[in-house]
Image: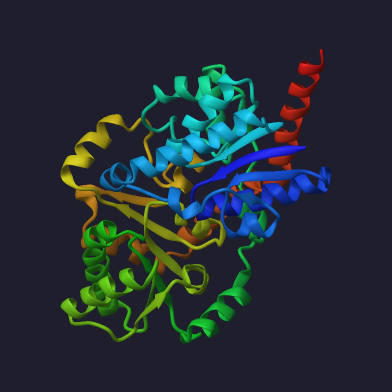
Length: 388
C-alpha cells in the first residue's frame, strides 16, 4: 500500500508521525511519500521537498513565494497522477492541501483532509470547496462535525493526539515541581506564565498589556514570579526590549522555547488565543485568554466570525468556561481583575478543573488509531469499488 501525505508545518508533522505509526501497526508494509518534516521522515516517510518551503503565513510572504509554491504543487500532483497512491492525506495547511486534494480527487484518487479548516467559525462558503476536494474530513474536535454533516460532507471525529499524550490529571503537582526545577524557579512561590503569542505583531499588541498587568499584580501579590517562554531568539529579544522599556526584570524569567515547561510550572496562564490554550487546558492550568488584531483586520474578521467564542476551551465547552477578552477589551484592568479572581478564588479554580477534565475525556479517544482506521477504510472501500 502506498499513501501520499503532505504536512506543511510542525504541528502537521507531529500528526503525520502518529498517523504513520498507527497505520504501520495495521499495515507493516505500507509506504508513505509526499512532503513531511523530520518526525515523519524518522518514521520512514519519503519527502520530495523540504516541509519548511510550505511554511508561509500572512499575505505578503505567500505572494513573494508563489512561483516556488506553484512549482512544488505541480510537481507533486504530476507525480501522484502518474503513479496514484491508494489514498492521499492532506494534513492541515488547507490553503495548499485543499488545492492539491482537488486535483487528485478529480483524478479519482481518494482524498482525506486531516484537521478540519475553521469553516464553522468563518468563511463558511469554503465548505463547498472542501466537499468538492475531499472524500473524508478528519476532525479533532466533536463540535466540528455538525457543520459538515449539515452540508452532507463525510466527516469523522477522531479526537486530539495531545489529549492522548497528556495524563488526565495534567501530570499533577509532581510535574509542576519538576518543571519549576528545570526552569530554575522557586518551588514555594506562585507563578504565572505570560504567553502573548509567537509572532511579532501579536507580541507588539499584547506584550505591553500583559507586562502592565503583571506589574499591577506584583503590587498585590509580592511573591509572584513570572515566566515568559518565547518562540525563538528573535521573539526573546523583542520581549526583552519590552521589559527594558517597562523598567522591570526581577522575577520575570525569559526562555527561548520551553513553552511546555512554562505552562507546567505555572499556577495560571495569561495567553493569546490559539492552540496553546488547548495544552493549558489539558494540563489543567487556569487561564485568561486575550487577543488583539489591527483595527482594520478586526473590523473585517468580526463581521465574518460565526461563533460566540474564540478560545478552544470555550468552543469545546459550548460556554464561557474561561475568561476571554478581545480587541478593545484587552486592558490591564480587565486582565488584572480576572487574574486576581483566579489567584484568590479556589472554587473558581475547581470549577475550571472540572470543566477541563470533562473536555479532556471527550477528546481523548486514541486519535492516531482512529485516524488510521478511517484512512485505511477509505482506501479499502475504493479498492473494492475499482475491483467491481
